[in-house]
Image (cartoon, rainbow, N blue to C red):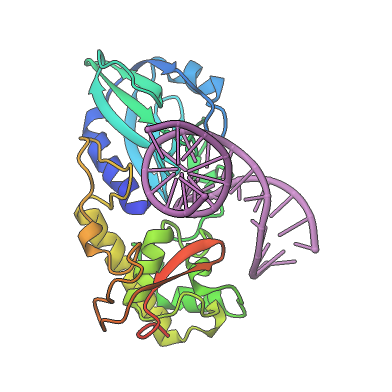
Length: 271
DNA sequence: AGTGCGGCCTGTCCGC
DNA sequence: TGCGGACAGGCCGCAC
């Protein structure tokens, strides 16, 4: 399930194969993603040249000379670069056929992802314009978290997963970051101390950059562009480890619903 | 404005 | 063994 490290891993994997390439045509086998794949994407991209591949939050931005493709992998999406003759498999919904004999293929079994097209500034797109800071930027730190949390009554885990607080922290890395910062997931955001905010921001940065370094986490269906799984799993301290010992204190990891999402934590060392 | 929740979708796992 | 149902996930968009 792609979180920010998985999306960044995808960007780095795809980039060298597509930058500077001309898109010969777009094949949409099933355009029923979160939003229908727009006709404008198919029409405008034929003949367009991909200039660069950027990332904002969990969105991938393929900037071309005609406009920008905004792609989101949802929770089961993946992008692969394969030889043009590779037959599509189930859930391989869209191909961008490139010059040079390869194509960029979107696979998304659950179709929670999207593929949109905009002529204008993609950062001004409704989906992107209100997003919070990138977690690995200097804009995101303990001060930012603390200021934003004033008066907030929501659980700190929900607050951390809110994309207007900071982008890219999904369910897995939220639990992991809170464990590292020793903060209980259910604590109200407004009750987290300034010192804890510093620890939390540092934990988010560390967890995400460590995960990016090893190519993301593989739970069920995430794979990198080369088809290899990510290798972050061994570093997971609490996620999906109910009943196993806390790596810090040995108490059994507990799980609970926090804001309609499963949270994993150590109730002995997270306060 | 902040908060909570329904809904989208399919593969996987569990219990009967 | 087969089957139904719960569950997982990101995140928009709505209702309070």
